[in-house]
Length: 314
Image (cartoon, rainbow, N blue to C red):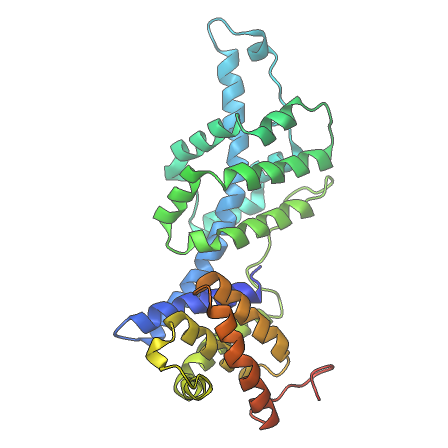
């Protein structure tokens, strides 16, 4: 399930590419935005499949040990704690996950060797060895360690991240959110459940989907008038000297402040200051705050920004 911060990031990336493209095709940019959201959901499903695949490799390893010409005691009596981990088994055998991945036409079919290498390195990882050595048993214990192995090894593997980058330009930026969705899904698994409940891409009320569409459209529709406001507010700065990323952040913030009466100005201000810390220059957060804070106050007083709802009406 996408959150609004991530939607802002998606729009920011698409607009950055849009302003660097000489064509500046709005329809093309909108299609790219929709495509990037679709790829985000695909990544979530692929990460779920990644975890489930680890059980299959573990079973193969146990079977190979038993078939050795001269098996060692640990081959004949292997530690089966990992392969019997119930949340892992549920992911590996999930009919819902299989159905959704087939409907999307995605999977790890061509990347089995990469997955096998991720599994082999997992065997030497601290979280795995600690889990296998522990005498503690139980569903919560299994779930906790599965999450730790996923977060600290599976998706942190350089091999895995390199593979993601090759498959989609969107996925390295999407990995943290997709991983958080996977962890949320695993935490929601109940011992009595027959299958895993997958998170939808959008909430049923579709508020966030509408938020994305409106913010994208309004940012471009009012780009020139908002740029004029930025130029006026940045008295000692020529517009060309302001980093492109900062200009886009400012235009998005102004569009959001005017288009969404129910979002507090403080929320909008803080969101774009935070985004500037990750996606622009070291001094951008101070610059963004210095432009938006007084500008928001002026526009509020002039009636150009109107807020409705409890705690928003002054």
